[in-house]
Image 1 (tube, chains in turn blue, yellow):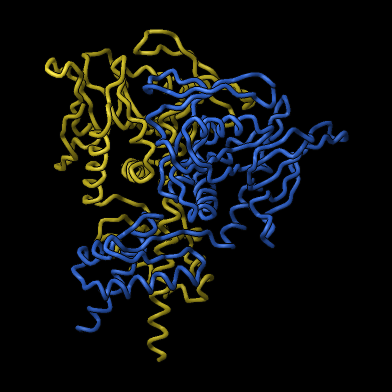
Image 2 (cartoon, rainbow over the protein chains, first blue to last red):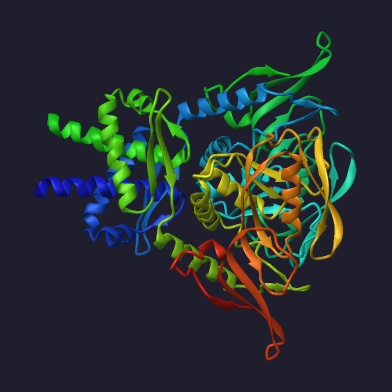
Length: 291
Length: 291
C-alpha cells in the first residue's frame, strides 16, 4: 500500500508538472515552486521533470531546459509535432478550399482561416518555436487582421504583443507616428504607436497575416527605428507571389499564394505552396489550387 | 523489468494525454485517437484518462467529461485555480500600479495590461470557464483593443473570434454595416462586419476591454440582430463606474474602476474593485487605489 501511494503521488506530480509547463511556455519555473506545491523534496521533483522532459522529447513536443544558478529553474520551449504540422496545413487547405476566396479587386479573403482558434494556436506555436531562442522581447503587428496571429505567437513566446494603429481615435497617451508608402495604392499612409506600448531597445518579432507589396512591413520597420528597437525577424502567414515587384523587406512566410486567371471558368484561381519558412525542410506542408 | 517497462508506458501515456488535452480545450477527442497513437487497448487509455481526470479535479484545473455514443470521446473543460486567480489579479494590480494610468481627457491607459501574454491567457481561461457550458459558437469584439482578450477567450472555448471593424478599408467581401450612438461623444458612428465572418443564427459571446457608456456594446448587440444571432453574454475586462449614467447593456465585468480627483496631488486617482463577474463568489480578487 505504501508503495502504491507513493507511485500515485509520482504520477500525480507528473501530470501537474506537465499541465503547468504547458500553461507557462517560455517562462522560468523554479523547482521550489513544485516542491512547495507538493511538499516534496527537490530531488523527487527533479526526477519528475526529467521524466516529463523525456516524454516531451520522444514525442517531439518541445524541450525542457535547465537554467542553473541561484535564480535557476526550468523553461519549457514548445515545438509542434510533424504530424500536427501536417494536420494543421491540411486544415488550412481544407478551409481555404471552401467558399469563394478571390474577392472583387482580386483581394484574397482569409479572415475565417485566421479566426479559427485551433489553427491560430498551432500557427502561434509553429512561429514561436522558430524564434524562441532569439531573445524576442515583443511581437509587433499592425491592426487589424494580424492581431490574432500576433497574440498566438506572443502567448507561446511569453512576451507582450504590440499593436501599431492606423488611426488611434482612443487616447493612448503620447504616440510616435510615421508616414509610409502603401505598396498597393502608392499612397502615403500614417501609422502610430503609443510610447507606453513598447520599451525602447526591445528586440521585436514582426508578425502579419499577409504580405502583398511590403509597404506595411517597411512601415513597421521604420517604426522600430523610431523606438530604437532591434528586429528579430519578420514572419507572415501568407505572401502573394503574383507580380514581379519592387524590393520586399526581408521576411519569412508560411505559404505562398499565386492568383492565376482561368479563362475557362472566367475567374481567378489560387495556387498555394509552402513559404520560405519551410525552405530548409524536406517536409512539404501542401501544394494545392483553390478558387 | 517487464513491470517497470509497463509502468513507464503508463506514465508516458499519462503525460501525453495531459499535454494533448491542454492543447485541445473544449474539443472532442476520441479514445481511438490515443489508442492508435500508443497502439494500446482502449481500456488502458480509459484508465489513463480517469487518472488525469482525478488529478485535474483534485487540483481544480478543470473537468474531463465523457461523451457517450458512436461519435463519443472526451472533452476537457479548463478552469482556473483559485490560487492562480489570486495571482492573476495581483499581477494585474501590480501592473496597474506602475506608470501613469490617467491620461489627458481622463482616459485610463490599460494597453500594457492586455498586451501581457500571461495575463491575457489567464483572463481568457477565466472568462471561457464561465461560458463553456453555454454552447457559444463565436466570440465577438470590436477592433482594436479588445481583440487580444477575444482571441484568448476564443482559444479556450475553441470557437472563432470575430472582429467588428470601425472602418474596413481592406476588402472583406460584402459587409453588414450599422450606425450606433457612441456614448461618450454622443455622435453617430458606424461599425461593420464581413458577411463571411459570422454564420447566421450563431450563439455569440461579446468580449471587450472596457465599458464606459455602453455605446459600443449596444452597437455590437444591434449587429448581432442583423446576423440573426443569439447572445450568450457580454463580458468586459473593466468598467468605469464613475458617473451615474444612462442605461447600460446587460453585462459582466471583471473589475470596476472609479476615477476620483485628489485635490492634494491635483490628479485623478483610480480605485478598483472586483466586478460583477465575481458577485456570487466569496473571493475578493483585489481592492486597491492607483494613480
